[in-house]
Length: 266
Image 1 (cartoon, rainbow, N blue to C red):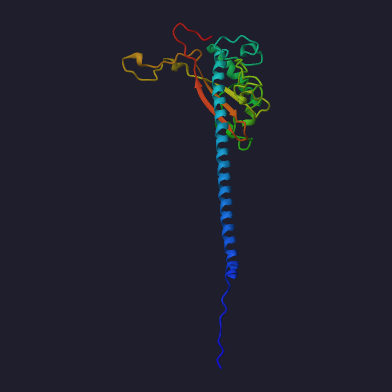
Image 2: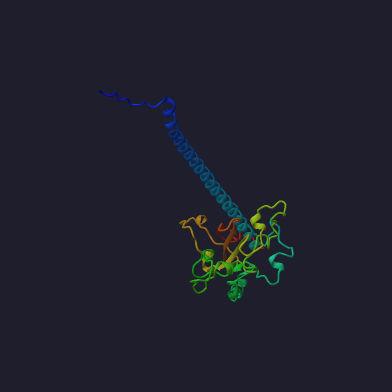
């Protein structure tokens, strides 16, 4: 007698129960992918915000350094921020301890000799300095390690009565606590805050006054002559710290006071 072998078939509700776990796994995978996408988007947004913030901070420091260059020019000319002759108590000519900008040739050598004795203040005094020796980028030297003879680090240069602050000798306003023109220029809370400038007094060869820097042949109108009185070139270095740690802008320029016929430096 043969026995019929019957294979039991799963009922419909049993098939549905086995399929539920697969759907849950797919949902979890999509949720995790969505979370990773959201995390990547937030990180990208945060990174872009940091870049924009750092760039904005550097731009503020750059603008402050530009203002310091202009302020140093006013200091050299002995003028206020409005272009008038500086006669206030804060002017360089009125401060007995501050070295004076040379107006005549015989004043240059004594000034350089005086500044050369300021070995404890980086051969600078109230923003006036002799020409620096050795490596010129002192702002990249954060300590005294490996300093050569005649070199100074950044901390030695950013001291009161070594460098000069914005408006110190020109009376230029930095704004008020409620309305500041540039918050960097107004910050003098520490040596490594705000901005500084230094003016190097570099004596020029007297024979250069009669030298033509541009060859013009027989036409002397094409010659560029050095009409300097005294024969001095100034190199201005301006440094401004940003509001964020590590932000710094440094600008340099050379400045000469050209004397035209009938004019004399004031």
